[in-house]
Image (cartoon, rainbow, N blue to C red):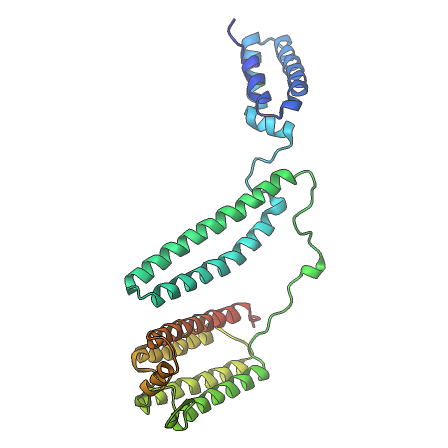
Length: 317
């Protein structure tokens, strides 16, 4: 005998619920279908038309089965969505950055070509992003399904979780700190060029190459002075603005550009030779340049991002 629409509908619903519930669901749904079909037939519809109309009204059997099984039909529901979002954003800021830095540094230290370094780093970052998104979502999807009956989020919200006000970077202490840091850095550079830090048989020698004086060193001092002026401007305005963040970006790129342009001659050959004489590996100069280059790039990127973040969270006037 051919299966009726009712038989097919019951089969579709019951096979999508846990086995322990199937008999109860089948009995309840069979009774519901029979009652509604009888009501429509009594109202004058044909049995076939009444059966089709009732089944269409009940809708997709998978949706109905999910209701019987109390099973969510979304990957991450509203109960856990915010926790998933916060954790995912945090990990996407940290994990790919650390992976990119580690892979690029390792490739550079192994002597890889620039194209190989960039290609491997990009592929690694994309892969890490995909893994972070997949595994975080998978964990929360499992929590959604195994903890759906609890009714409680992963971390219950309380007033203690309200964010604290962040520093604006426009206080007098920020200006004083900027001045002290720049003066101290300039003093270290001048001391290194005049006295030196690296001990040798002939006395102390400088870490920096003396050929950088005066042009490159003076240019760096100009950028440092402009950094102090920027800090004073921000303090006077009482807050960071997008314009201040843009100026900060230009200064960060200028300082990084000066250092990167002279990275090949940045270190004093006498200081490098002293390191080789002390037992350092033959790749000492290459390692120094690589680590210094990554440090310069990291500081510049951090400084630029920090400026725009301060501008974004600064109070509007």
